[in-house]
Image (cartoon, rainbow, N blue to C red):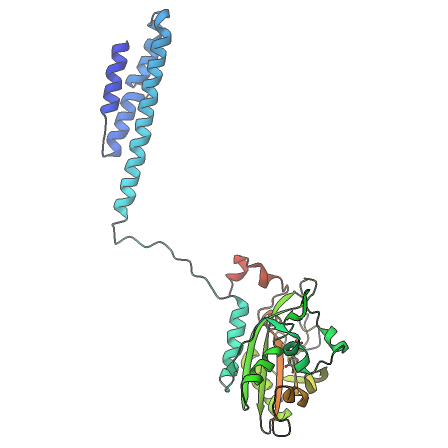
Length: 335
Ligand code: DAH
């Protein structure tokens, strides 16, 4: 019996193949129901009692070796097959999943393009700002309650360092370095200490517009915004200006566009008013021009600011602002 096992061991050890058919034939011949190794187990009952322990161990060793051999050769044949498949240039390629732009970037780019067509440049400023550029130069008097309109994140150790609460700060930076005529659009991220909800977030995006030249009038502001509204929301769009207050503009207004979803008939998005508020604007306050060294007796200008998330929500019918920040692929893939 032991001799038989030894010779089978040698056979198993010596076996090798390049084909799966031969491998399967080997498996059946040795490990199958009527295989040579399986037969040893039936013969085992005839082994003398005192030899049973040794013979049993040897049979098991043989069986394990044969099983390991089959697994090893199988895996080798699989790797050989896939590597030869790699050389077949006629096979279709692996699919490449394309990313898509974030809806905030899409809206930002689209709005920028509309204003670029009428001569606006794009400008940027820092997100970490100082009091001067965010408040003082924009005519927010010291201790004025208007500063409470925006819940500012300050740096604890230095109250002059803060996260900008609006992109109006970029106006100041542009006016510091450029002489009129100025026509610029400043998109960017802003920060406010707000509780996060479906309608508010502590981080969001704005686009600021600024136009300064000789003889810029409120009529220019209105026409520019009407042009934008029609380009962005459709030719049939109308705008409406409501008087408002901002420290940096005088007079100031808030602008509504006719609801593009219901055409002004009234729906739950426009809360049955037919109008959607999209931005704040006004004529640049002479104090703001003077603070940046621009002669307000020669130059006038207008400014406006809008929230990108808000415009994106209106455009795509998105009900929850938090979706823009979660980076859930199921949401992002839709744009
Ligand atoms: N900075 C304002 C805000 O964050 C938006 C704004 C309103 C910008 C009127 C302007 C403007 O330039 O003229 O709420």
